Image 1 (cartoon, rainbow, N blue to C red):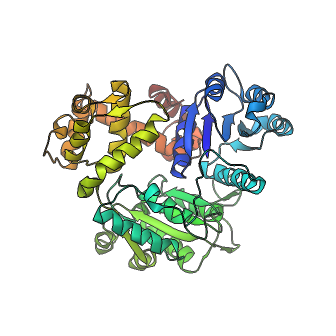
Image 2 (spheres, rainbow, N blue to C red):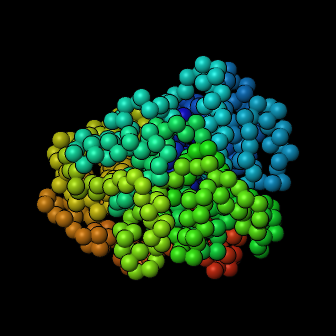
Image 3 (cartoon, rainbow, N blue to C red):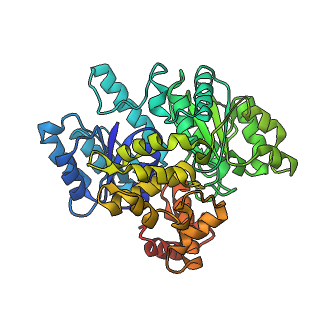
Length: 461
C-alpha cells in the first residue's frame, strides 16, 4: 500500500511512518493539511492517515475535499483524533472516512485497519498501487536483495521458516536488516493475513514491559485508567516479533517463557488466562550464550527461542551485494524522481567498512542524494557521507572509531553526541508511551515541564 501520513505532531508522524514502512508499505508524510492536499494533487495514494485537528487545513476539511473529488474515490481515510473529538470523528465516518483511532494510541493499532482495507479491495477486485503482502510464491529475491553465498543461506532459511510455525531467532549486528527478514517470514507464512506485531524490547522501562507485552486491567497501576490489550493479544493469529530480546530484564523472562511455552498469559492486574495463538520471531544483537553465562538470560528461554536460527551477515561480509542493494535503496529513496550514481561512487561504497550496516548505507545514500541534487559522485560521498576518513579505500574502522568520525563532522563533538543520544531517548520514550507525553516523562524520571522543554529544543513537539 502507498500511504500518506499527515500530522503536525512530528514525533507521531515520524514513528508511525517508520512502523508502517517496517510493515512493507511505502509511506510519505506531511506536516499539515495543506502539504497533504498539495501531495494528493500530484501523487496517487491508497490510504490517507490524518490527524483531525491541524493548522491551515484540518482533517475534516481535507476529507470533504477528497470526497468531493471523483479522482480520489479510491482513497481510504483513517482519522487520528483526541478523545474529546470523537463525535467529530464519528461525523467524519458518516461523510466517508474508513475509520478512526483515538490518541494516544500505539502504532500497531493502525495495522489491522490497513489489513481491512487491503482485504476489502481484494474482495472488490480493486488493485492497489503496490501489493505488500506477497504470497509464498512471490520472488524472494525482490524482497531480500543480495546474491552472495551468505545471503543465499539467509534466503534458504527464510523459506524453511515460512513453511513452519517454529520459533525463529535472528542474530546479527544492529542495522543488518533483521526487522525486514522477520516481516518477510511472516508475509510468506500461512499467518500472513493476520497481524505482524513488532515489539522493541529495548524501548520499554522495566516497569512497563509486562503491560506492553500482555496488556493490563483498568486500575492495575497508577495511570491505568482503562483496560488495554498487549502485544500478544494484538498479534492474535499472527506473528509477534520481539526485537532485541536480549534487552528483556531477567525478572520478566519467566513470564515470557510461559507465554511462549504454554501459549497462555494474564494481563497485568488480571487473573483470566488468555490463549496466545501467535508465532514467535525474536532478534538479538548479542550472543545470548554469553548472557546465559553471566546470568542475565535464562537458558530455558533461549532454547525455546532458538528453534530455527538465522544469522544475518554484516554488510562488510557481503560487499558483492552492495551495488545491487545501493541501486535498490536509491530507487526507493528517490520516490520517482530522477537520479543517477556514478560507477566510481558505487566502487567507493563497496570499499567502506559499514559499521552501521544497511541502516548506515540508507542514511548515506539519502544524504548524498539530497546534497548532490540527484547526481551522486565519488566526491559527494567523500565529503558528505558519515565519517569522511572512514570512506577511504581499504579503511576498516571499528565501531568506536566510526562513531568518533561521525561526531567529528559536527560542531561541538562530545556535546553533539550527547544531544543526539538525548534526542533518541526522548523519541524512544514517546514511542513506548504511544505518544503520551506525561507517561513518557514519567518513564524517564523527568518533570513533565522539563520533558516538554526538551521536545521543543529538538523540534519534536
